[in-house]
Length: 126
Image (cartoon, rainbow, N blue to C red):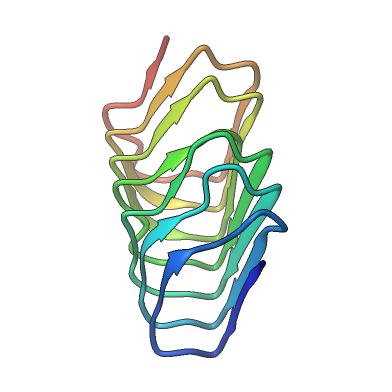
């Protein structure tokens, strides 16, 4: 079962095996997407506590307030306030046009690309 949350006020819970697409949500919190193929979050605010360990890819575009997230692979475009992101075993991390990136930890990273990123503080690559 997949999770699709378009324009919802809040999205939470289990994503499922097929993957998920969340667009225009105002509160994305406590998502567990372990084992799903991919997760896309677009133009959403307040993205917190998202756990997608083992997910092939995660894409966030125009999201704000991304914090305390755990990703397998990560692409963030045009987002603000990315904090406390942990990317263990990441195949690739792409950040483009992102403001306020703090406390990002990328362990066993393959590729890290940052373009037009402002306010990068405490980024670690292991």
